[in-house]
Image (cartoon, rainbow, N blue to C red; front, top):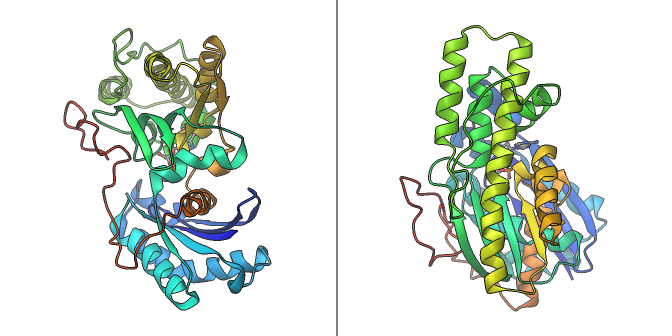
Length: 350
Ligand code: KG4
Ligand code: ZN
């Protein structure tokens, strides 16, 4: 079974061809980073236009690289949400057109499910497992019980982890996207020089909050005035250290909950763009070792937005006979666990 996957929910236009035996036959990604950089963030209209301009060409290239003729495709999967709606619609409409012309199933994939199942594309990870999903738009702890079956243990009450990185980078005068820029600066910085808060340290629960840390950082930057490069590196290192600590400590609480519900569960998975961060991975590895859990952190290319994970989620769904009708409507919001209570505080993240 070979599936074409499309991803257009944020600022990456991507098309991939993946086989059921886990071979990624093609994985094409076009980042719009350069287009959005002058704005210091993603502009939805610019993103939608970019997807429209490039998606067809990427699909053709992916099929060529995969040496897969159209007639060999078993299905086409596209991100159906959550995300920037203009972009999601571009991918969904394209996939529907392919499905109807080629007479193959169309699968609308929840972008978050794409991230959640990506670990199963690179390793033998059985359900249930504990997932820390950390990206530019999301910051959640979930138990993945099966395809389409998620229990959310925690979410952010304010910013997502990647969003916090992006805002911190802006304050420090570093480039967009902020996560990689902070990681580079932090590599030679001293995390102990600046005293930034440790969010929710010692508190029970699995929700996240970054606003206190962000406010403290903004205050510090204001007090310091002009920042010399060494100071930027030290602040970046302190910020990254506190974020990594926060993610690990909330995950520690989630492990206790996971173990209560599933005593034999033995995997901790981290996914999403922020999971590309080496310091965060190292901290999670220590935590996993402490609890005799196996940590699965997909390679950076599979952590940041990509279409291979969408094609793979399509394969997982198709195997269960789950396809979608052609009147599926793109969804700006699409929580993985619709029963989960809204996050305390103002957060309305999916
Ligand atoms: O998953 P992703 O590619 O897109 C979303 O679905 O949001 O995540 C993008 C986010 C951005 O906020 C970016 O700053 C962050 O992931 N990110 C990182 C790193 N690489 C990307 N954050 C920390 N360290 C990194 N190395
Ligand atoms: Zn994502």
